Length: 182
Image (cartoon, rainbow, N blue to C red; front, side, top):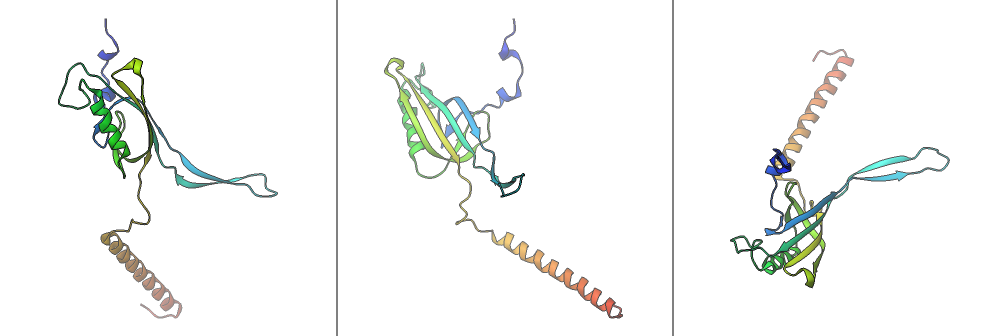
């Protein structure tokens, strides 16, 4: 009798191990939240509002991961008899300042910052710890971003070319209006 794992699935073949800044963990649940930033304008004595789209909202990732005792030691820290090694590496990665790479099993890697996490360990479930983590999309700092020299140069060249074309058209039109051939 066949089971669900016998059915070929492309998504299962492409699963990636979960990690944040190379600190691996088992991923139980992950979710991604985003949308559009909408400002709704309502005007006096008007029946219809106006919704203004202000761009995409920053992505937020909520992840439930865990580290657990493994029956034997392997070269990968996540698969060891002492789960605390993987736990401590993940805590250090989560508390490190600055952005990091979040790799979830079914999504492409994302540059994020960890805004908060919760570590839960229960005595009755020894050898196991649960992490509830929240990550925010890192994005680009607008105060530090500057267009590259190539981009600025290309923009200046395109501007000069457009100005030259406009001048030729205007000159041709003014000469035609004056009855002079160009």
